[in-house]
Length: 109
Image 1 (cartoon, one colour):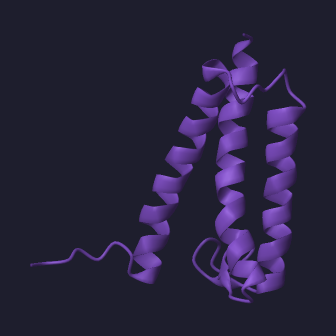
Image 2 (cartoon, rainbow, N blue to C red):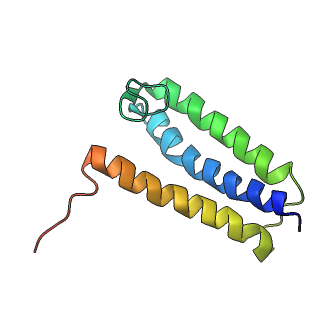
């Protein structure tokens, strides 16, 4: 398999993972951080901006996963870089936005 396809699948997983929180916040009518807010990544954008940003992420994920090479859901070689990209972005987002929303507050017994 071409290594550029693996890189494409990694970023496809990243963009697909980024689609989810923006889409969910947007269709719930809730503001959420986007790169377009002030300050970028910290300020809140409207639900409409989040739906549009989610759609852009979905289009990018589609292009990277289904228009580059031959992405096969049953192929470990395809799924592995996709899953790593989605997992790393999800963990990064959980830590980053947890600081803004109280999700990284340690609990004490």
